[in-house]
Image (cartoon, rainbow, N blue to C red; front, side, top):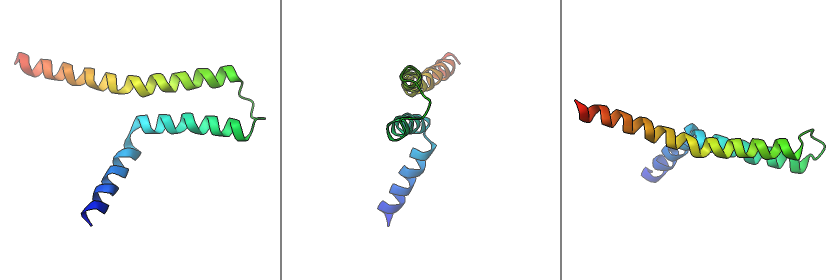
Length: 78
């Protein structure tokens, strides 16, 4: 029972994770374009969208760490 709760907690955390949803959207766009090639999304737009999502996936944790470092620095100065 404990393992189930742990799995539920992990799933809840995953569903709250911004990076998960950005990655999900990236995969979804690629799958939709592959299944429905008539969708009016050019390869250029698809590529740029993909790179923006990758930048966000990488950038969000970097900004979170930066905010934590700023908060830690403020605490240390006190």
